[in-house]
Amino acid sequence: MTRRDGSGSRQPRPRVRRSKAALPSGVLAASAIDRAYGLEPVFEPGAAGAALSEFAAIDCPYCGERYETPIDLSAGSFRYVEDCQICCQPIELAAEIGANGLLAQLTVRRLD
Image (cartoon, rainbow, N blue to C red; front, side, top):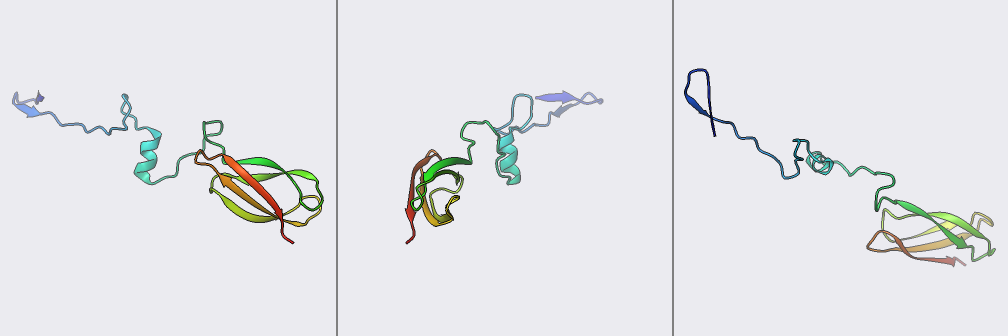
């Protein structure tokens, strides 16, 4: 494509490069901006797959009382010790996080 400048001669029209991630309006998609600047994706509450944690009800292996404890789904499978919220005895929690990012299995055991 060419264009005419004021002198009547034909000048090549500058080419505009568009990213594959560009939207029709020329605005970049948020994911392309994140990649370009090395940013982490933004957490969008209510979006599909956005759960970073959930609460799991467990029964204390010492006192038998049931309580809920938060489970971090963002870091994958884990094993850690937490004190019972009722009797303060140490409990080992081992969680398996599935490939879909959801809690697959939670094991609770005594430490004595």
